[in-house]
Length: 207
Image (cartoon, rainbow, N blue to C red; front, side, top):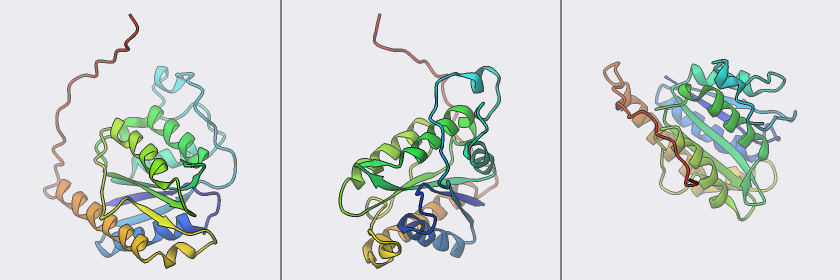
């Protein structure tokens, strides 16, 4: 089984990477493959709601000039997802939000039922708001949200400082332990047996 970890920080080896690496090492101890993918520093488009991915049944975003579709391909091959982000103004990095929104909208069937976890890293505050924002996307995609002993948050400002957050690193390991446990339970007999769901009945409140 494989877990995809997305490093949503522009700093490839910064504190978000430190937190994700702690989780990845724990996943590997359980015999799972863990791949950390960095979104890089090039622009990531926001969704423009053109709907072409759905109308043309592309299973990818119609725009192919950034990293979105390459990470979508990795999601298809993965059994679980962890998304990490630094905290900017009490929110996740805008690039990783754009990535997740486009990936889930265009290829959401490859996210459904896969366990997911968010990881947030901050200097001081805003982490819980960012963490909640990231989890909301998982819940809309029917992805079991993997918990830990605390919210999946680590603290640090300068690169590498998050490693000094003893509780934060323990939280990452506990989250990874829980994810490995859940994945093994889901795939224990080779048949995940996902629940049968009703057809979606969308509506709004304007009549």
